[in-house]
Length: 75
Image 1 (cartoon, rainbow, N blue to C red):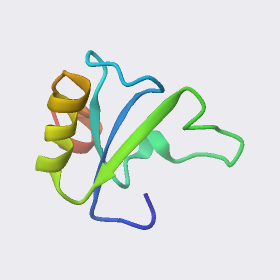
Image 2 (image 1 turned 135 degrees about the horizontal axis):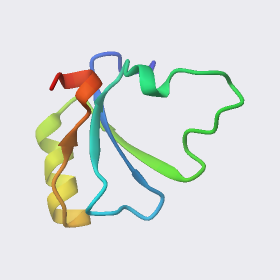
Image 3 (image 1 turned 60 degrees about the vertical axis):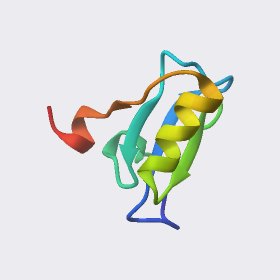
């Protein structure tokens, strides 16, 4: 996240789930916390500065469509 402040990422389960592909902006407050929180233990992130590449990964590799984080992208 810190390496690509303008990027976006998909949060999904460790084995990517086509029903859970949530797109967040790099600075999403859901992923800020103490160092004891393990954001990647049960979940994985696919990150890019190119949203089209993330959408392609979601549809072609995982077989699902992304949903937008309401905090990052409004309602």
